[in-house]
Length: 91
Image (cartoon, rainbow, N blue to C red; front, side):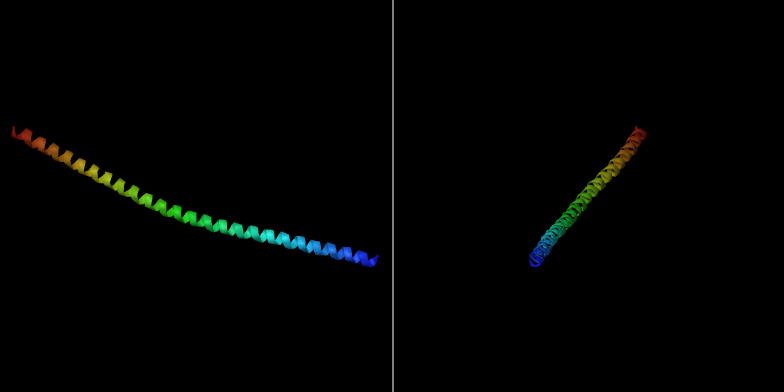
């Protein structure tokens, strides 16, 4: 009877260790999966930031071109006013 009790106890201990190993393996697998996902997301962020910087540069270039056009238009308007004043003075 004692031998049977010890055998059952050893079997439970073995099953407990086996269950622990399986649980530890599952946790390790989960950890590795999360690390891979983290790296993938970090790479996606880096790519998105690079694309955003490119878009910002394009935006600033177009905005600068519009400012130059506004200055040129203002200069032409001023020159036209001067020309009109000169023409009026000559008449």
